[in-house]
Image (cartoon, rainbow, N blue to C red; front, side, top):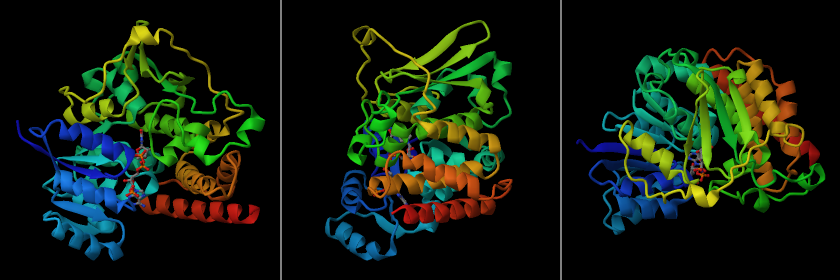
Length: 399
Ligand SMILES: NC(=O)c1ccc[n+]([C@@H]2O[C@H](COP(=O)([O-])OP(=O)(O)OC[C@H]3O[C@@H](n4cnc5c(N)ncnc54)[C@H](OP(=O)(O)O)[C@@H]3O)[C@@H](O)[C@H]2O)c1
C-alpha cells in the first residue's frame, strides 16, 4: 500500500483537527504534506510539531519570518509559505494525492478549485465553494477527473447510500436511472428549533454557537441555527448528485443519528447512521472505497431508542427558503446568498446585528444585486464582491 500525501486546507479548524485525528491513527496510509491556517498560528505551530509537514501556509505575509524562526528554533523542518497562490500551490502540487477542503467560506474557493483542476482526490467540507460556483465546479471535476468525495456528514451519508455506479460524481450518471426515487436530507434543527419568533429575536452568539449535537466552527454553528446550513446543503446536494430540489426532502431529525437517507423505487430506504462525529465521513473519504478505523465510538442504537422527525419551519427560519429561492433563480444568485450570509453571520457574531436580521441582510442583497449567468469564475467573484458591499452598507445603515 502506497502512502497517500495529504494537504489539509484549514488545518486549525474543527474539520482540520478531525482530519488530523484520523490521519494520526494510520501513519502507514497517510503522510501530511501541507497544513494551512489563518489566525491560529499557535495551533499551527503545534500541528507542525506533531506532523512535520513539508509546508505550512499562512494567510499573512507579515507572520512568515516570525513563524519560520519559531519552527527553526524548535528544530522543525517545515517550510513556511503564505498567501492565496501558496494555498493553491499546496492544493495542486504533483506531490499531493489528497486535499481536504476545510477552509470556511468563500476564502476556500480558489485552493479547492485548484485541487479540483489538478485532478486530486478532494474531500469537500467547504460547501460554500460549491454553492458559489455550482456548474463551474462540477464541470471542472468532470474535466480533470478529480475524485470528489463529500465529507459534509449528510452528503457523505447520501454518497454511502448510493450504488458504486453513482459514486463517481460528475460522470453524467442520473440517480433516477439507478433506481433512486428521492433523497432525504436530515437536519438537526440547531439549538433554537423549538424557539418562538420572539425568542429568536433575542438569541446571542454564544447560544447560537452551542450546537446540541455537533462541535463545529462558529460560522457553520450559526448557519445551523438559522437553517442556512440546510439551505446551503440543499444546493450542495443538487450540484453533487445532479438532482433538482424537488428530488430532495428536508427533515428535522433532532438526534443527528441518521445523517441522511436515499429512497429507491422498490420502496427501500437506505440510511447511514452513526454518532455525530465528523471523523466518520472524513475516514470514509480518506480511505474510500476501503473502510478504516476513525476513532468514533460505536453507536448504541438501542439506547437511543427513539428517532424523531418533523418538517422544517420556513417561517421561523427564513434562511432555508432564501436558499431555495436563490437556487431557483440560478446563475450568480447562490453566490450572492452565500456572500451576504457570510457578512451577516460575522456581523451577528460581533453583535452588530440581531439573529433575525441575518435573513434580512440576505434578502436585501438578493433583491438589489444583479444576478448574472455565472458562466465564468470572474462573474461569480464579481457577484460575491458586490453582495458583500451591499451587505456591509445595509449593516452600517442599521447601526
Ligand atoms: N465543523 C463541522 O462539523 C463541519 C461539518 C460539515 C461541513 N463543515 C464545513 O467545513 C468548513 C470548515 O468548517 P469548520 O467548522 O472546520 O470551521 P472552523 O473551525 O472555523 O475552521 C475554519 C478553518 O479555515 C481557516 N480560515 C478561516 N478563514 C480563512 C481565510 N480567510 N483564509 C484561509 N484560511 C481561513 C481557519 O484558520 P484559523 O483557525 O487559523 O483562523 C480554520 O483553519 C466550512 O465550510 C463548514 O461549512 C464543517
